[in-house]
Image 1: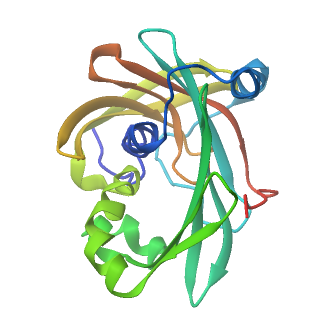
Image 2: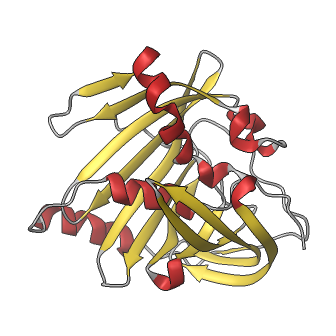
Length: 239
């Protein structure tokens, strides 16, 4: 049993994005089609794991795309990407789409490469947050406004923090749309988001960048997230 990975409770950021993203009374056919197109991609590749886990070093252009399915059948997609560097920090972008709407936000995070060290999330600082609204206008949150909301935004980054992990063990081979990943590690975690506590089981793999997550199941199957696609370069910003 090992505790060597700091980007394991990846379900945390997916849950946060899902809760934050808007949902209306009627599904938008264009959004449904977009979600389905993400899920349709299938890869037959196999990625071999190693006995000792070492995460992929951060680099601009990396991305992971996850498909999320609720136990009632509703589906959504989230993409987490590193889209730039600024003032010595990394610009982390989160894009999400469900059957009602899509959203995109960015954070400038300083010290993100140190999140693997003891202290985890306490090693980082969020310098600004940018949110793209439905009218394609960009709202920037910084200064005093960010200081008041920073703890909330840090919670959305718990997918990169070891502190919520109770157990890490061999996870076996996992097949998802992005491929088959051998010798995964499984991590059990609990996270608190918006006053609610979520438990999750996540399977991680050293070949997956950004958050390393291959699959995650939250709260006894209430939501399952699987890796649809990933890359070490090529991620383009939403704005």
